[in-house]
Length: 290
Image (tube, rainbow, N blue to C red; front, side, top):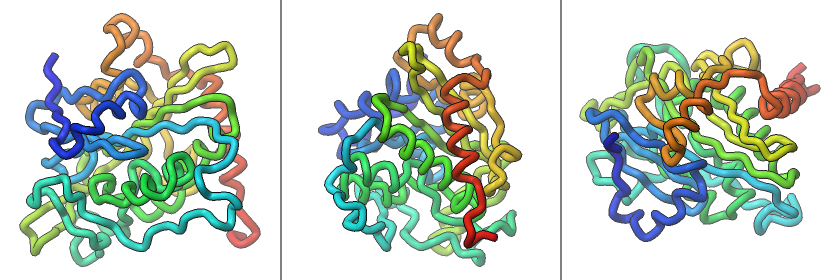
């Protein structure tokens, strides 16, 4: 089957990094009406959609580290950048500007919206250092996320994955992106010349290994309504369902027979148990919350 994706010219010299960040290959795009531009960074890779002006997918990998990269002691961690950046590798007509998503520019929803990282600053800063961290602030890595989701569930899940796996002799691969079923509305940019659709949900797919080195997969469909009430708004689903709703084929290098078995799993496996246990602890209200 054809892949309606292409590595953008400026990323060709780094195309060899794609398989480092994508488990069994970059997602294959089966949607001929939505060709994707692949952007390779020093800590993650993005399949950018000129149609939606945001990532269709963003992928990264977290592994054990004895110390966080270049940030010892903890007080000297490289500070979170103050600004977002248009991605200069994209043609100008696909650059949406670096401002936040102001309420006055939003149509179709009254949700306050944040500029939401698909691959997290938190993970990449600790795994790959400050240059790679800066690249997570390209707008090509951003999607309009509800404030409750971005500052609640999504942040907690991102931190959970990093805090678990940087301490273990293991790796975990993550791919995430938006789902537009239905589209919640749109954001006007450039005096209405550009319209950025607002997703209804996000997907997050994690692949890891159990203690016997067997592959495990967790697929989540997460509502824009999600906040700290993690298990109410998170739907454990199958990769097959995610693929149907996004027109992507994840793990594109798998044989068809292996892929069919892998993508239909919805069980609460050891990988999910590990993530869920840690999420429950992180989700406990702090003394400041109460």
